[in-house]
Length: 342
Ligand SMILES: Cc1cc2nc3c(=O)[nH]c(=O)nc-3n(C[C@H](O)[C@H](O)[C@H](O)COP(=O)(O)OP(=O)(O)OC[C@H]3O[C@@H](n4cnc5c(N)ncnc54)[C@H](O)[C@@H]3O)c2cc1C
Image 1 (cartoon, helix red, strand yellow):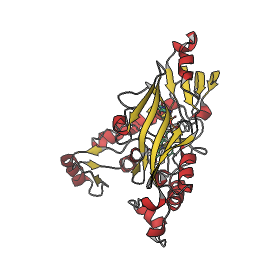
Image 2: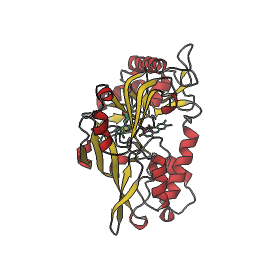
Image 3: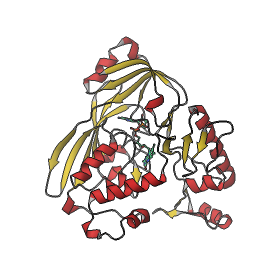
Image 4: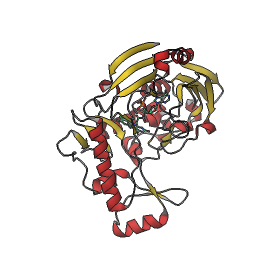
C-alpha cells in the first residue's frame, strides 16, 4: 500500500485538468481496505476510486481519499478444449492485457484494442467498440467493499451490464473497488473474427477471412482508432463525452421528416439509436470552443470534448452543458454524459 498527501491529479486523468487530492492511496491486496478503515483520519473522509482517469472529468479538488488498485497479475484459472479463463488484476493497463491475449491467439477482446484505462474499470461502463462489449467475455468480477473490505464475487448476470453501464456505475456506484476480473476467451481454432463494422472489414481487404487471427483484428482496430481519435497526450480528452441517445420509433419518424439525412440504427426493441456526434455537429459545435477558453469540441470528432491546454474541469463541464442545451433545443433530445463528472 502506498499513501501520498496533497497530490496533484493533473497527470492522473486524460483531460489533464488541474485538481488535487487530499490523499492518494494505492492498494495491492484485500486487507489494505481494512487497514485504511482503521486509520482514524482516512476512515472519515469520502473515498473515490480512480483507474487511469480516462473516463473522468474532475471539476474540483477532491477533499478526500482517491483510491487506486495497482494489483496487476494475470492468472490462468482454467482451460478446456475450446477456451481459457484468465483472472486479471484490476490495476493492469487494459491495452497491455488485450495485447497479451491476442499474442496468445485468444479471441474475445481484439475489437476492444487501444481503449485507454485499466482492467478494473472495464466492467464499470461495460466498455465497447467496433461491435463488441466487454460483458461478452467477462465471467466474474471480484470486488472489495469500500466500507468493510469484504470480498464479493459478482457473476456476469449480477453485473447488470447495459450500454455503457453496469451495477458499478448504477445501483452500487461508489461502493466497491474492483480487484480482479475473470474473462473467458476462445482458443484460436474455436473463435472467429467479428467484422460487423465496415471500417474494420475495409482495413482487412485482401486478407482471407478464414486466415484472420485476433492479432490481425487488434492491429486493424488500433490503426483505425489512431486515425480517428485525438491522442489524450496531445489534446486532453476522455473519448466520447456523451452516450448515443435512443428515441422511440414515433419520435424518430418525426425527426426524419425534418432531417431526412439523420443517421440512425434500429434496435431490436424497435427504437432508434442516433449518433450524438451528428447531433452535435448539426448544432455547429464541431471544432468550436467555449468562448475565451481552451475547452473545445474536437475538429476530428464532434463527440470528443478536448482541453487545448489550460482548460479547467469546470469549463469543460460548462461546454458540455452548452452543447446539451443546444441539442435539446434543436432536436428535443437530452444527451447523457458517458464520462463520470466529479
Ligand atoms: C481517447 C479515448 C478513447 C476511448 N474510447 C473508448 C471506447 O471506444 N469505448 C469505451 O467504452 N470507452 C472508451 N473510452 C473511455 C475509457 O477508456 C473507459 O471508460 C475506461 O474503461 C476507463 O478506464 P480508467 O481506468 O481510466 O477509469 P477511470 O476513468 O479512472 O474511472 C472511470 C469510472 O470507473 C470507476 N473505476 C475505475 N477503476 C475502478 C475499479 N478498479 N473499481 C471500481 N471502480 C473503478 C471510477 O470510479 C469511475 O467512476 C475512451 C477514452 C479515451 C480517453
